[in-house]
Length: 525
Image (cartoon, rainbow, N blue to C red):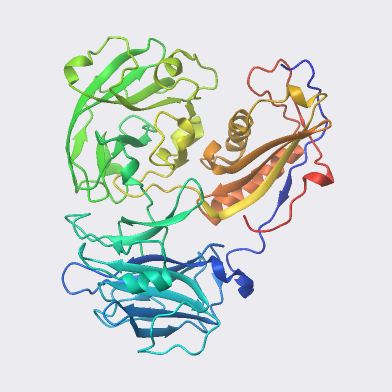
C-alpha cells in the first residue's frame, strides 16, 4: 500500500462539543424514554436498611424530572402500594437519582422508611405525564416509560404484573445466594447488541453498574482483568483475575513470558477463593496502593531478583492457563494450547517483534503502555467483559483498582471527533479502523500524559469518498478533568505538523481540513 497515498498539508480536527456539559439541565421531555430504572436492591441481609432503587438518564447529565412518577406494585392483588411524585427533582450531574434508605451513601433524593421496597413478587413502574396515580390503583401501562417485575423466591409468580408491564418476560429473581458473603442488587446493563437487560451484581448506588456478564466467563473461571507494572523498583505490581463471585479457584496457572525469547520466566499456581465481586489478586507491594487490597486471598509474586520487577518492561506477556504447574517449566518456550484461557501481550516500546503475538494472540496487536503512563502508575484494565479473551482492544489505561471495579472510560465524559486525510485512491486506505485508532491514541497520549489508549475511542468509523478519508469516533474519558486534557492535546495536535504512518504503509500522512460533509450534529453521543 502507500504509493498512492499523498501527503496533505494542514491538520484540523473537526470535533463537536457535547450539547452543554454536566451542569446543563435537560428539560426536553421528548427524551422521556431515556430515563430508565437502572438498579434495584429490594432484599438486604438483615433488616432491609440499605434498600434502594436508582433511576438513570442516558445522557449522563442533570435532568429535570417534572411529570415523572414511580409506582410500586404488590404482586398479591396487583395494586399500587406506593406512589412517588418526582416533580421538582433532578438527576445528579452524572444522570442518577436515588430513592431509598437514609443509611445509603450518597444520600437519596427521596428517603424511604426501612422495608419500603417489598421483596416480591412485585413491580416497580416509571410513568410520565400522568396525574391520576394513587395507592390502591390496579396495575396498568398507560404512559408507562419503564418497568421491572421482580421476586426473591424462585417459586413466586407474578403473571398479571408481567402481562401488563413487561409482556413476554419472566419476573427477575434477586437471588440472595448470588453473592454468598455479601449483598447483591438487580442492575441494568447493555449488551453488545445495544439491548438493555437486568442481571445480578454488586450494589453500586449512585454510580455505574458493574456489568460483568458472568454467564460468558470461561467455565474454568478466569480472565485477566487488570495488570499493573511497577513504576519503579519496589513499587506495587500485580495481576488481577476475574471469575465468578465467592468461588474456589484451582487448576489455574499464571505464566509470565519474555518477548525476546518467547520463553517462560515465571510460573505460579493460582488457587484460593475469589472475592464477592469475583476478583483474585496476585502481586507485590500492595500496601503501597491507596485503600490497599488485603481483605481477600492475595498471592505474592515470587521474585527472581531483588533488583528487578517481576513484570518486565519491553515486550512481554501475561498468560492464564488451566492445568497443572508441572506443565509450565521456567525457561521453556511458550505454546498456544487449548488450555490457554486468556493472554495479554503488552509492550513499553514502539518497535516490537510479532513472534509472541503470533503464539498467544494471533491477529491482535500488543497493548502499548507508554513510559509516562508506567511512571504515573497506570494499570492496564479490562473494560470489555467477558466473551472476548486474548484481545488487547478489551483493555484501557486506568488508575489502579486492585480488588475493586475497574475505572473504565465513560460515555458521559465524551465528545465526537473526526480526523481527515487526503488520499489519491480510496482503495488504498487502511482496511479497518483499529490501525488508525492505535496510532492516533499513541500520539495523543504523548501530548496529554493522561493514560489515553485506543479503547477511549468509541464507535470508530472509517469512511472514504473521493480523495478524503475520514476517521470518526466518540472520544471518551474517565472524568471531566481527563476529557479537558484530551481536548487540550487535540488542540496541540491541530497546530503540529506531525505525520502518521498506518500499518505497513510506505508513506507517512499528514492530516487535512475536514470538508463540510464530515461535520456532525452536536447531538450528545
